[in-house]
Length: 282
Image (cartoon, one colour):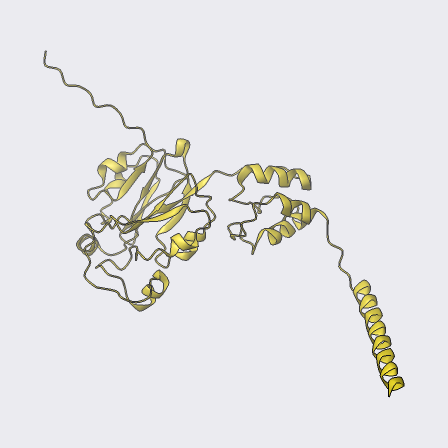
C-alpha cells in the first residue's frame, strides 16, 4: 500500500515536471518581445484610464504611441502638454501642442424657462429616462436632469445645480476627457476650445424644432431666426435645422451675436465686466 502511494506521488510529480517543461518551451517559442518604452510612457500617464485619448486606458495609449511614427494622432487630454512633453522625450518625437478644451453644457432650459409637464418616478438615469419618453418638459432635446454626466466624470468637474436643474462644469477641474459627452443621451454637452483667458461664446441650446414650437417649450431656446448669423462678420455662425451654431475656430469673441439674440440663447463666458459709464448733466 505504501509503495503504491509513493509511486503515485512520483508519477504525478514527474508528470508535473514534464508539463512545466512543455509550457516553458512553448512560452519561449511564442514569446512576444515588448518594447520597454511602453512601460516608461505608461508611468508618466495620469492613470485615469478615462478613454479621453480614444483608447481603452493609459496602457493602450502607451502601446499606440510607441508604435506610431509620431504623436500627431495621439494626445492625452487629461495630462495635457506637460504629460505629452514627457512622452515625446521618451519616444524622441516632437511634442504635440493642442488648444486646451473644456466641456460646455448646451442647454439653458432652467426650471423657470422650461416648466415641467410630466412626472417621472423611474430609475434616476438619463439613459433610461431617454429610452422611455422625451422628458419632463415640452422640450424633447433638453437636459433630463438625472446627472449621468456627473457620475461619468472622474475628476469631480460636474455637479447638478438644484436651482436650475442643469449640470454645471467646474472648468478648473475639467480635463476635457469627454466622458460626460459620451454619457449624455441628449448630446447637450460639447468639448469646445477654452478660448483666450477662458473667454468663449456658444449657443446654449440644441433644440431643432421650429421657432414657435421651440419657444413654447423653453423661453431660452434658440428659435433659428438667423439674426446672429447676419450680424457675425466672421462667418462663424451657421443656422441649420432651425438651430444656430458657433464655430469656435472662427469666432473672434466680438459678442455682437450675444446682443442680437432675442431669447438669450447665446452665452458669453468669462468676459470682464466693463464699468458702466456715468452720465453727467452739464
